[in-house]
Length: 291
Ligand SMILES: Nc1nc(=O)c2c([nH]1)NC[C@@H]1CN(c3ccc(C(=O)N[C@@H](CCC(=O)O)C(=O)O)cc3)C=[N+]21
Image (cartoon, rainbow, N blue to C red):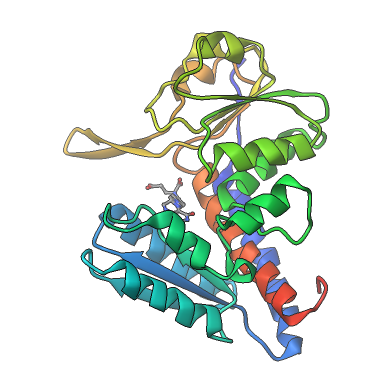
């Protein structure tokens, strides 16, 4: 039997509609949540993502501030911009688009963002809060989107064996923390793992964040498993390009119980949670509970 296809696009649209109402209610405090995005250089994929984000920020009733800087911007200039945004009362969320040029120390820059405005959840304070189960944590958006999609299929993940393939600070590590929070048994595999296929065959949940196109094959998947594909790769196809993930979709869909497509899976959920985090930051900064 073919797997259920988990529709991230529709799920994200639903979240956005709910968010819009929550933003309206927050408006009673006299404030509108604001999200600042810093984009360095001319990477076309980054520009597309930043445009989509700005459009949806405004659609949700929030303010969008964009800061575009040339590829050769200095570390000092970026640090000063982040400092200005940290002190700007109208800015609730700050996102520094990755990747940054190689001459920029990304870790130093991300640590300069006020943790209260760190809507990506990349600041060490927020990583620590997530790891210790502190509800104030601003948590990375892609992992939040993955958990949401899993829970659309299986409301209670308790006891499931989850395999995360990838150990980045942005996806793999925070996902491991969130899955633990859902009472899963968590395995994190990575490029040095000996037999990832064998680990995969034992997993009830597989989350692929490998950066390797179509690395996860059909015969790696236990029948009925839930498969979440975090990868996005643009590959040349006759006269244009095609977008594929870290999972060999056509092989895996014959064995999985449910699977996210690429595009239309995790990507749209990442943006929805970015906007959700912006509202959370705005509420926490103004000291109001969820309204
Ligand atoms: N500080 C920072 N935070 C990020 O969250 C961040 C970042 N930097 N750098 C780049 C990655 C990538 N990313 C995506 C978000 C949504 C889609 C998305 O909505 N994709 C659509 C369209 C895919 C397509 O056709 O290209 C989909 O999957 O259906 C894709 C990619 C956020 N990132």
